[in-house]
Image (cartoon, rainbow, N blue to C red; front, side, top):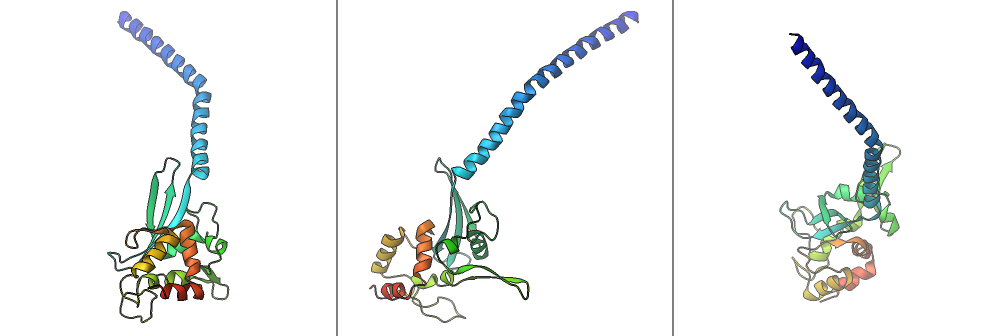
Length: 212
């Protein structure tokens, strides 16, 4: 019995010394671990803010859900990895105008205002309501169709053909807005903002309609 108690106390003492030593070593290393953790987190934020290219795009093509326009936001990293996200029209307007915080417009710059496009989220001070408006987006279907392709709305488009522009109109779009295919490509970045400006310009509309 005495031997058992002696051995128990002996091994307990050794275990205590081991734990104490480990604790001291961890406390000694904690500042270094803390420094490394802080460096990693702050460097991650640094690279996200300064090395990530972000932008928006719109595609004019029939989709599986029956919509004509597809809205997209993307992030491009310094190693050329691209993260694309399909968004709604409302999200597009709120993100691009800076009305909503979002990772695709971190500084919440009003891109519509920057490129002189009359779009955005407007508040009614009397009724305390908000509304989204963008005539330029609502006109994009006219680039592809000669008339609105669905029932319930009657309006003329600017395309020479019913379902697609003429070959020369397609060539004009490719040269001016850097797209290869109207079916698969998005109008993106400065090309998108230029397009949204152009479709509000009567002279541009007349010129596009005259291209055979």
